[in-house]
Image (cartoon, rainbow, N blue to C red):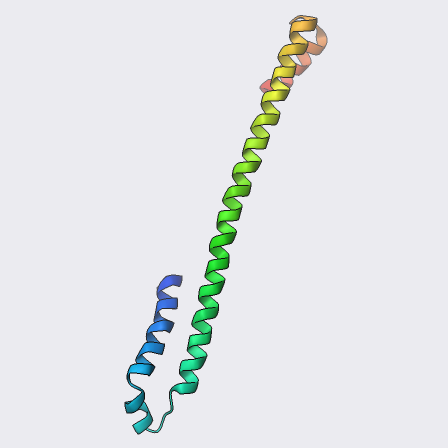
Length: 106
């Protein structure tokens, strides 16, 4: 079973179509395809809906990741600017300046 998810969903839809197109032959052979068609149709719709949810979740994840990265960059820049401010006020040789400059470089 080397089919992708999309190919598997397509297979279910293809079987629904085949049952519909060949209903007369199947009925003549003693099999009423209506119940199986209804089952497969419901399963195909469920799979399509869940795929839609998965696509939405991926999009939400990408949006959340971008927002997180942007917030992290803003915070880092503000903290780094604060290092520059403190070093400017106290001088680069002050003990606190050395500590925070080292912290920024780690």
